[in-house]
Length: 172
Image 1 (cartoon, rainbow, N blue to C red):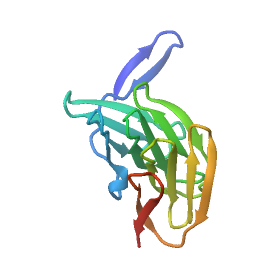
Image 2 (cartoon, helix red, strand yellow; image 1 turned 45 degrees about the horizontal axis):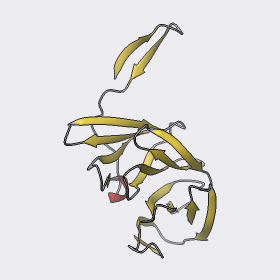
Image 3 (cartoon, helix red, strand yellow; image 1 turned 90 degrees about the vertical axis):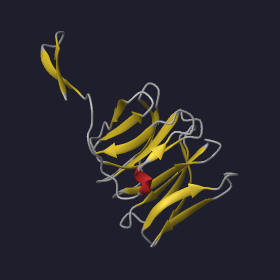
């Protein structure tokens, strides 16, 4: 962390400069942008956006301060979807360029194991933890939950088919 003085408010402010380390339980916590080559991975309540070509990090910090557990880039690399763990976790979609949150979805109760964008970018799927026991499909641009279903197994991965007509989950 780099310490900076904030003159207007007269308070000290900490600026995140570089993250060393990560926390992922499966490949659902690692994503690579298909357009920019940026690699994204969670480190606590921060998503690290690492550009290997420039050897630079960017960061997205969770406003709820909950630990990120999963993430995925949209096909165009412009958006990132994240899931988190903890009580009442949210699915959030972020604009990668300005690192702002675009939309957030409540609904899961205990944790989110995996998330994925549909190839056309219209839908996001989120799979809850084993204790959460639910999968949701979100039309994120229109802020609508399209579908949900109970699950009875522990899932670690989710991926849409190339045509976007269905998705596949994998786990125990």
